[in-house]
Image 1 (tube, rainbow, N blue to C red):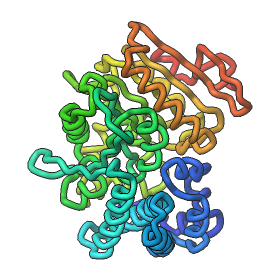
Image 2: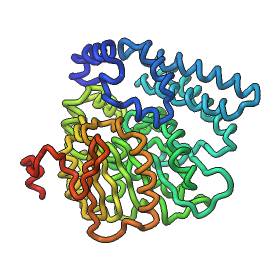
Image 3: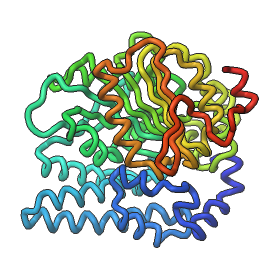
Image 4: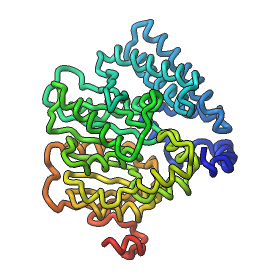
Length: 417
């Protein structure tokens, strides 16, 4: 636990008690709906929560209710209704186990088992189109869920769905079906080093191994008869946007394109020292550090992408909220300037990190963008598309700078333009 979190946990509890989840993550609820959380379940959970310590119980309680109803419908032969409820239960059991940070905690293991059971049942009920994946990786294991279109498919594009720091592979079941497999795209939602089951089995994240894990997942997809090995891309949200861009800079990467939203691509002082202490707590756990000072020297200081971005050679999409609290927009724009590959930038007016006000649009657009990128639509050298997306429905073409800047730019950004 960090020094800040030890002294400031009371403030997070107060925010939860007074303002609920939205006080911690403004506007995030619509984004979580795109990740399979039913709005009524969400409201039930946070009606029970007045402090962070109450989260595992609340998530587990409402998850159990959804699981019980799923069993009822399955027993009576209503497979689709049952599988939808198993999905709701799975993402909530996933939240419950995530809220317990000790990998040796038996409650975490049991809640993970209930999540896995719900995924197994929904996979069966949906014709085995959702399948568990376990891969060897550098003497350890990494885990994913394979999402296949209904019916026979071959030579299809494939997209790796990368979870943010606070996410797990199950969070993408709904989005994979709605935005990818429904369009004939094979999807693989993953847990890289430091995340979910991979971390529970002892695999921690370092500066480079997440990128190598992405290549392992891409190689697995390339081996499938359903997949065209020349059309594999990645959608990354939040920290997976960061990891996707690192992977895109690797020489010889299998990734043909990457769409990133909310990517943490600026400095890491903001997310680790000025944002909620839970972010740094989580990353310490993910990386296996207990010594905060050592983490700062050995990991945090080396995390900014910097000139790595200039090594990207294939199309990338970067989307960020105007007031992203983890990556200030001027730093996201400065990082974007370093990319010389075909690229596109969208800044969403008045949005915070979760991009909740444009969540459905963001997921749908990103899916369509990456399929077009895999088809070669954005390969022209020098492509640089920039957009500022207004809250009132308008879009300013040609610039992603916030309109209120009136043509001026912050000093740090001016230096790189």
